[in-house]
Amino acid sequence: PQLDLLGRLFSERSYSEAILLAKSMTQDFPQYDYGWKGLGAAYFKMGQSADAIAPMQKAAELSPNDVEVHTNLAIVLGTLGNLTQAEASYKRSLLIQPDFADVHFHLSILLHQIGRLAEAIDIYVLPLHYKALFPDSLNNFSALLIEYSDSTAAFCCLFPTLQFSDSS
Image 1 (cartoon, rainbow, N blue to C red):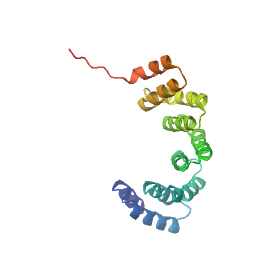
Image 2: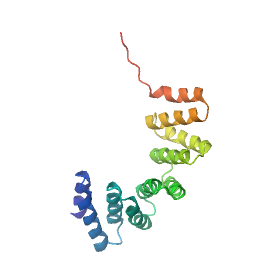
Image 3: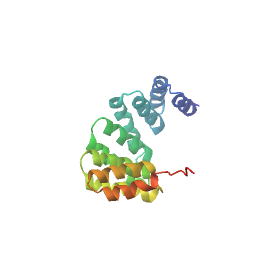
Image 4: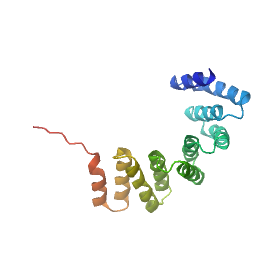
């Protein structure tokens, strides 16, 4: 019942109540990751990223092979400016699930932010391989290529995302 209620609180965006329930779950069942995941996610949704770190790290400790845990931790770490730690969490996610296109996408954005353009370009290509015509990735990849001074390649990358209509 608590798992269902926590899910319902998230769907209703009742994050303050979700925090209370998740805290209770972590006290009653500290060895299970779900309460810790919920607590970290609720703090993050409330804009309390710094408070989200400890529960997310505990969830990662309890479930070291959970891609979602490491990815969410990476997002929060990145939000707080801990880019090196965020990169490590994204890479941990990819060790678990190498074909997870969304993680490749977010990691490439992070690498771009820290100025590692060549690496970001290499990583941007991977979601395109795993998720055919992943529009967000194509758009961001084309922007990166423009920044990297390769406008022809950028157009070729962006072209598949454009939709044409027959105006006749």
